[in-house]
Length: 329
Ligand SMILES: [Zn+2]
Ligand SMILES: [Zn+2]
Image (cartoon, rainbow, N blue to C red):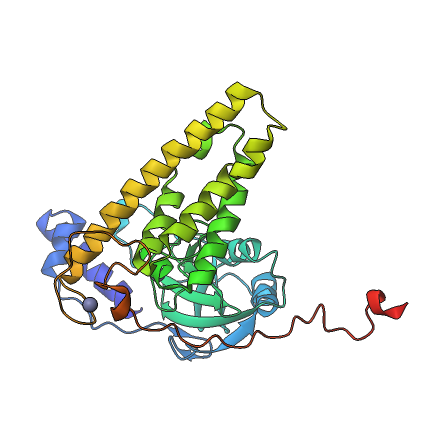
């Protein structure tokens, strides 16, 4: 009999003798010393930091037998845990359904995707990152997977699949990446909505604008969002696709959204300045005005540190092929 089973038997005996409910009887019993369940490759946790491919994990999922684990849940809840197997790669029990859901999430990355075990709480959850980019929380108590913010060790969720950081880490990403992210999200939002009114009022646009306010890239990100979600002024002026009423409707939608995001940015600017209290570089109090072209935590352009040197981009392997068709004739 395991230590947990012994304790449960003792609790039930106390319950029977006293007439108390199980949870009340359990509170009277001393808690056993916690001991992490051991996986087949040793104590849980000794695989943290290790890497393996999705294909290897799927191989275990397809061939390993179901394992019996003691969930140590209150029998009053009458819960049954998911079907699990003892993964050698994770060094812990993991539900078959959780691994299959992870495979679904990574279907576009492919079965050779390298996974890195970031953390593990046996019989609760594990965190893996894929190729140093996407991060997932593998739920062990259910057949579930949740995507996490891309920042290592962050337990928050991303804004959505096209804005893959939480609020704090979105503001910390490279300004060029923030503009690209705003553009990609805006185009996708444009495609998913079929009228201009539906393109206004999203929480994603506000999240992007708040991050831009923190970075001092408000104007660039605002114009990127409005151009991607609606149309540029040039296209509207050409009057190719709309009659006068359509053109007026789209201009009104753009101006409503511009005003909404401007208000969100001002509120964020004040929030950041209230949080830091004074310029983080010189310590002087903030002046009354708002300068959206500098990060909100600095008082003036002179206090903003120069951007770090830009690293040389890696050559694109698709264009580096010496025998490409374009060069052959
Ligand atoms: Zn985060
Ligand atoms: Zn300053």
